[in-house]
Length: 438
Image 1 (cartoon, rainbow, N blue to C red):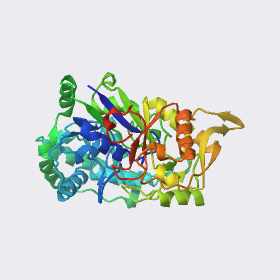
Image 2: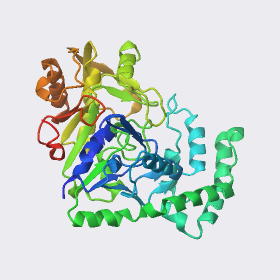
Image 3: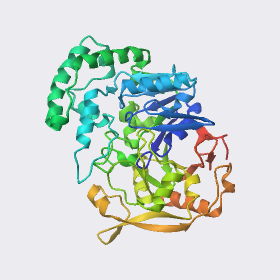
Image 4: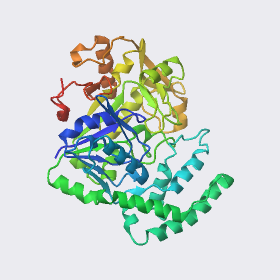
């Protein structure tokens, strides 16, 4: 049973959705195991663009079963909109299963998110997507106010909502004072009861489904969301997401033991981006950063926010690659970096006068580091129509090779554009992609 993970190794937005879409036809199951509608995966096929937030990118392949596992927090209204949008584009969604164990995002979570995000931590806002993800995870861990999807089909659902709304209204007033608006329990009950009915045919005990699939020898592709540098335990805390977005979160979120996973593909951009607050050592808040933003269309799938842009950070990616157990790298957006006259790779940091190659734990220390760069002449070549790696200019090959050397993991896939076809496989290591091109 080949289990493969696709994990973003930066701050998210690494084009994981494209890779999952490419791999999905070769797997029986695609499993999304963490995060919520704060994620955004864009998949381009010819003239058609699909934007996904909760539904796994494998949904575009009708023969693959797509699973939303217990580690996800679900906004039912959002996923219903996604389902309707896919249906309108002529796709079937009968191949989707949603765990009854997923925790549900309610209006009080979104209200809390907006109020809490206005508070500054270490001098700046965390910069969340305001989708209620963090507060929902807080309630999941706190348990008293948590509602799972399966709870919405039980007789005491309405009473649970009334009780929680009473408590949450008091909490919201405590946080926001006059800025808080009271929640109406009966309106929420009616709205979410409708959602429950609309989603009923998709709801399953996916943990047993997945374990049975493992026993039956099915192949599973695990789809990460966000990026490893946003991992709640191992990322740039507190400027992180609310779940384990690195490779260490796969088993906990999906329910599948790690021994069933034999390949981890780390997805990276040829440069770096970040959305929201927090330290970003290689950020270029200048013409270089703006050029990367415009060439790469670096605006969020979920929010439309402009992404912060900078040079490739090998210190950070080596850390997340080791953390996630990456066995291969998929290097995305090489077409973007190929239009830059001079490119840089951060190979180390300077902290308090000392050269370091370990990624600092504390956000304040990371904010103080000075990146140490290697500079390379650009190759000014349009790679978007390239179908073979041998066609790359030597300077581009040197750039790819240096990234692999610094990270300590081979680059096995290179992307030269957003379309499925704009993908080059360097080796036969990514067996699920064998036959695309080489």
